[in-house]
Structures are given as C-alpha cells and as structure tokens.
Amino acid sequence: MSYEELIGLQEGKGKLFKKPDAEGSRKFFKNKSREMKSKVTSVKEAVNKYIEDGIYLAVGGFGTNRIPTAIYHEIVRQRKKNLALSGHTATHDGQILMAGGAVDRCDAAYVVGLEARGLSKSARDAFEKYGVEVCEWTNATLTWRYKAAAMGLSFLPSRALLGTDTFKYSGAKVMHCPFTGQKYAALPALPVDVACIHVHKADIYGNCQIEGIDVGDIDIVKASKYVIVTTEELVPHSQMRNETDKVSIPYFLVDAVAEVPYGCYPGNMPYRYFSDEEHLNEWLQQEQEGKIDEFLQKYIYSTSDFSEYLQLCGGIEKLKDLRRKEVLIEDLEELGE
Image 1: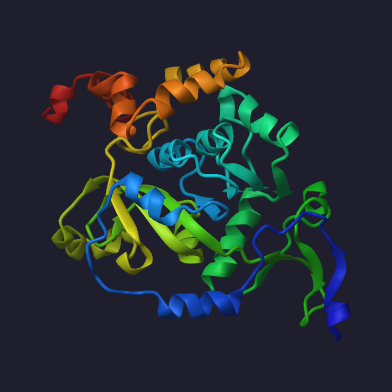
Image 2: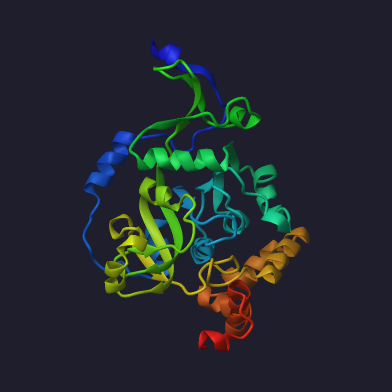
C-alpha cells in the first residue's frame, strides 16, 4: 500500500502549533540529566528560568481541580507573552493566562467554560476579539497526543473525531490501517516545552505523589522537555523510598520543585480543600462587568507572591473553611488542629 493510500484521505484544517518530532525528542531526552539533586526553588525563579516567551505550555489537573494556580499567577505577574497553551480542560488556569494576555494560540478541548459556574468572558474575548489562534480537539484526543509523544512516536491512530465537525477544525488526518484497511484518525504527537503540575507531596529531588486520579498528567510530564512542580508539602526522601508504589512522577522527569501550600486555590485540591466558589464567582462577575483588569491588578499585579494573594482572599480562616468543606468535617478539632 502506497503512502498516498495510507495517508491523505482527509485532513482537518486546524493548524499544528507544535509538530511531532519523535527523533528530536529522543535526542533531547537521551541527553537530559538524571542526576538526583535538590531541585527546590521558588515559583518566581522557576517561571523566570523555564517559561520563555513563545514556548508551548501544558496544563496539569482537570477543570479547577489540582491546578497549579500559583505558577499561572507568576506567569502573568512576569508578563510573559506569546505562549501556546494546551487547553486540556484548562478552565480558571487557562483563563488567568488569557486575561493576562499571555497566550496567542491554543489547542482547545475545553477552555472557555468555568464548568457549571458559567462562561468566561475573558477566554471568549481572547478568541473572538483578540485573535488567539485555535485548533480544536477533544479531551481524549489531546490526552492521546501527549501519550504519543510520551511513547516516542509521531502519532497514534484513533476512531475518535472521525465523522465530526471537531475533526474538520483539528490537525488530524484520516489514514488506512496497513493491516486491515480500517480508517482511523491519525493524531499527531504533542511534544511540550514546559509542563506545570500541582501535586500533593514531593521530595526535594522531584519524586511526586498524586492522591486520586492523575488524569493525563503522567503523559504530559513524559511528553515535556521541562517540568515545574508545585507541591502542597515537601516530604522527606525516605518517605518516598518507603512508598514507592505511590510515586506517580519520578524525580528524573522533574526540573523544579516549589512548595506552595494551597497552591491550587481557588480550585479544589482533592482530599485537602474545596474550591472557593465565592472567589470564582467574583472572577466571573468582574469579567461580565468589564473589570477583569481591576481583578488582575488587585490579586496578581499588586501582590508579590501567591502567599500574599491567599492573605488577600481571606487567609487561614478562609482556607480552614475550605478544608472543612472538602473533608466533610465541621469541627477541625477532630483533625487535631
């Protein structure tokens, strides 16, 4: 079967913002250091070192769950520009970047909605008014694009997207299976420049534990040249050695570790704290009233770091309340606090 018979039956008209480069990726990872050394740093230093204008950025977590909010605040605070964003259900995190003018192109599965709370006007304006380029995918096909890159391949075949309008606006191609002649959508691998992930626990070397589902984060990390991790708590390396079955991200994939308690706020950190619905509603309200710049000025540009932002949002009393809601315990004395 010729190449023309295998490939090129039909293709989406979406633009590939990051083309597959299996051989280039293999060469990069072959030479990446696997030295076990302390990678502890601050969010400010990590963003300054790894987030360069124009790079392709991947988002960990899902929706408002387990998102690395502190990193996105710092990207906006440092006024990074022309980033490509993988919008794999990037809600409040992606919307922060768009409101801050940091993104100019986006692979989108779900980016405008803030889930059941409503639509983000800033994200919608980014596409409709401010010219952010978009290529459409689904959550599953974006995840499989990460997986292809993580496996060192240039594409993965899928039945998803075939026969849909999403395919028309994607960067996928229809191909014949060389064994059966079956038609598949060829999903191009998505090699990422920098991934930002928030986890429950990490040690100083970058070994990470995620409690609950990891969604597509493991493939995102494996597909990324550089990985910045924020963690609810730094734990001794001995704990990781005693719980190797719980280590979902090994140290050699991670480049920077920053301890940021409540680093997912105002999102939901599973088993730790619930989302701050009042604050998210304030965001939506400010957007609708055309005051999002005032929101950014108050909570990001006028604060020096994420800790100061948390204080501004209610501090420890608000955070204790969110913890009560998440663990369904009304009296924190039961937690020994």
